[in-house]
Length: 73
Image 1 (cartoon, rainbow, N blue to C red):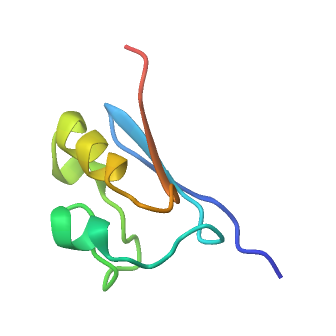
Image 2 (cartoon, rainbow, N blue to C red):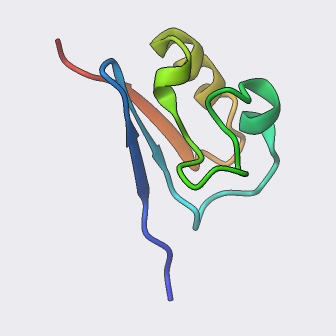
């Protein structure tokens, strides 16, 4: 059974997570714990930081499981 891509949105940004691609390096959690916290049911909360901070942290994801795109205004 494959795991489904997860989508998390704030007013400014959409973050997607593909669990099939994730290498579980923990880079996201260590780098921006207010946004990425695996102890929560909704573990990604992009509204907890600026869109620029979220984008920068997502770019550090070594596997590419996390992706971020700004919302059109």
